Image 1 (cartoon, helix red, strand yellow):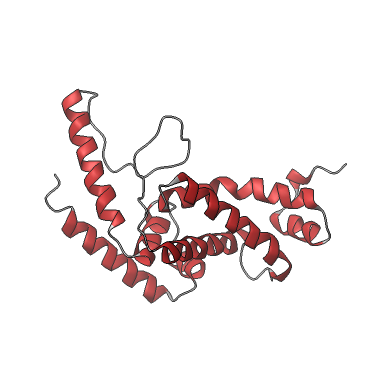
Image 2: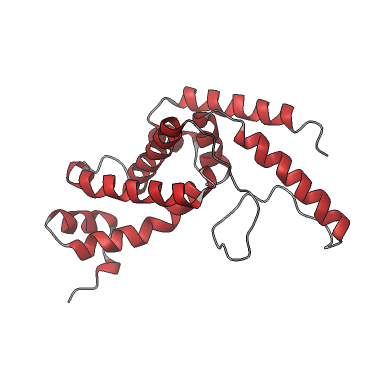
Length: 192
């Protein structure tokens, strides 16, 4: 039996298209942490996150035969994830919270904007309060602004890559990021 984990994404895609379900499973496992991280940054409710995760990989499975290798698989996957997140939010017309605090049980990367110099209770209370302000500020962003902000600041994507993922121009992404940064700056102005 061939070790599928050593195959490239493109080879796994081709094997999946030829009916090798194990190849698709390896492809999912290779990228599921990144997908989960993006979803968890976009949506706080675990039930919603599970629904989005399932929808993403269902769309990937159904659309894999149409993948044309014009971009990296991960870019295509993030595009699907972004679209599912935005569609989910529009469908239920509610804003999801972006968690930026680190959970002890969570190994996914988190935006670490605030940290106490010491573990003193007063500093921890102040930091928790500041993190709450930041959570609410990010939560107040429009869905596409929030997604662009998260892809740039939480996942370190370049503007060109974000434009591909969100299927819009680089200028539009720059606009989303500018507006998001201005809104956050204004909302967090009083948080010191």
